[in-house]
Amino acid sequence: GAVVSQHPSRVICKSGTSVKIECRSLDFQATTMFWYRQFPKQSLMLMATSNEGSKATYEQGVEKDKFLINHASLTLSTLTVTSAHPEDSSFYICSASWLAGGLNSYEQYFGPGTRLTVT
Amino acid sequence: AQSVTQLDSQVPVFEEAPVELRCNYSSSVSVYLFWYVQYPNQGLQLLLKYLSGSTLVESINGFEAEFNKSQTSFHLRKPSVHISDTAEYFCAVSESNDYKLSFGAGTTVTVRA
Image 1 (cartoon, one colour):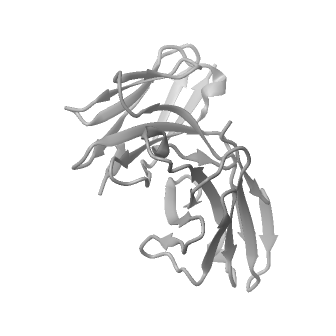
Image 2 (cartoon, rainbow over the protein chains, first blue to last red):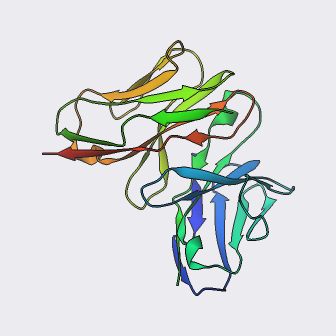
């Protein structure tokens, strides 16, 4: 159980275009989803936290107008990189959790990641 | 806010030898601790976790970690590694009043025959 998928797994786009990445919880309802960015050989950096039906909370230094997050249902969150540039090239990973209370609320289940390359 | 320090960026080890990956954290409140493993070009997989109860936690593939509150540590150990254990290992912590995870910088484990 607790499977999270991401689509696409890899995407190459031209500079100036927008790219949408989907994150789905396949066998549970995710009240909260998290979006991370990982540079080569580095750790994960939290970009934003999204709760179903409300606006995402962005971490300091993350441009909310550039990285649009939508969490319209309990099983789907999307990250749209708008007007992408080469410096946006990275590995984007989502995670999902079910904040129903209790200790298990602190567990996050991670997707396999999306490799974005902007040319 | 919490922070996580993984003291070793790279750990080369021979097959069947033991390995220890160090993780220390700082926090002013109670914490929950996690170890994740990441294979090349893949997402993170939960290796083991400490939420409550016994301070020694084990994974199904032979790893174990011990939560030491006085030393604020959560070191990961395996008594005998396999080639397939070659991966990046991340220690992560969340505070009891926040669901966000903070990750350490990661430790690259390379197992050689």
